[in-house]
Image 1 (cartoon, rainbow, N blue to C red):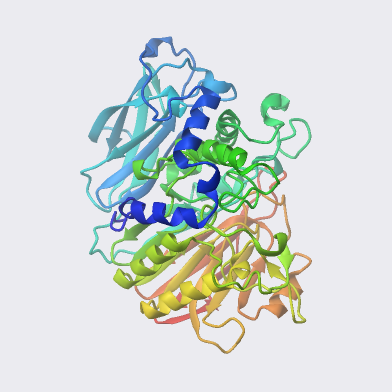
Image 2 (image 1 turned 60 degrees about the vertical axis):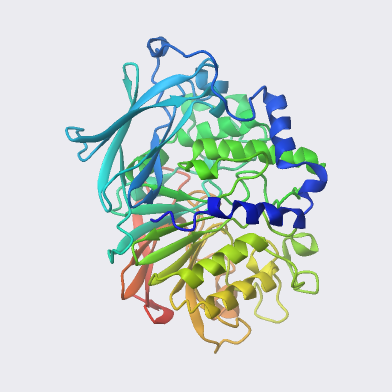
Length: 545
């Protein structure tokens, strides 16, 4: 995946767009950073502590949360770990001192052919997380990596570089989203770790901010219960950091991260349900919410395999970015939370009207929308793929008209969707694929140029992955299955079971395999391919495989 058109090159444009919203009336990015630093006694710049911890003093395994890699480029990989010998304690059980970590990158899993090694510093200001950008690597290579602190050695991870920019190599990738810890076991991740995919896209809701009841629930918690610190909603930086520790303590999630590089983007629950830019779900003062958002964004960057350009600045984090897989695919990873207009009509499922149809409303923000469309004009990829969060295609919930639509999805921002589709058409994008999470079900959509006309041209496909656990076990045919399939003729598949999707791309077609597990409230569910579809280059439209 190529660094071309990295969002860091568009930072001035992004900052210029921010005053369109209300954020700067209340709290600037700098102010949020200062308030965050004051609230947690944290240097806003993340400067290193003066003292260094002697690694020999770490008497318990510091690699309890595993390893990860992400955002593969043709000549570079990003490696991640966090030191936390006591992950359910503040600061992971380490003192507020920096720790020197060594790392190795090898061509073999026994590390007999090490090609790169180095040292990194785990700063307490970043909760002893480590982000190592390893460069000068060969394209289209598989590498193995590990970390070491004192006498402790991390589990080994497997990653890979993207092919060279002119390569025509194929690609297999996975899609996951929505993994509420207390609603089930991460059985889907156990199976995904065993898949032969090149990369995994996580499309949001990596964690949930709600209180986790330490006694009730379906999951067998360590030692029978969880510490009481998890039985409250995440608001502070410490809250979010501890919640990531809880989620990453799961062995199946750790196995998936160790097996494949991830490309991540957030939705709402990494901060707060259905927030919109600087507008919270509930009526708290905007400055209070932005302080919470600053904490959530910082903890997200700390715990995800993200590169330095995604490091947050106060209440802002530039998450949208562009990656390539040779000349086969361009991936435009979107952020549909941070810059959106507030949901119309108070959110939820509502009838469309003047408020939701206002052409000034945006789901992406003006700068990100221009970046997306301009990138399509420059694209020479066979496939233009858009990993993002919320349902893009029209979705009626009634067979009679008018029908309500979701105000939190692109249906609540139809002018924004029309600008994107018009931009793809003007750029000559012929093979458009949108990747979506959020809704806890599998969907397969044909993207119509005009959703009001069933005979309108199909201009792309939308692959919606179900949740890993959110919604508990679910069912193959939810109660609204007949209604949605009838009301939306461009909807080709719908399942309410948990699981993930794998997608294979080549220069002739794309194939999507919808994988499901029968249950998540108990362990051990087998994996089933519930449906498979293909769409051909130059002839968009999903056909059963």
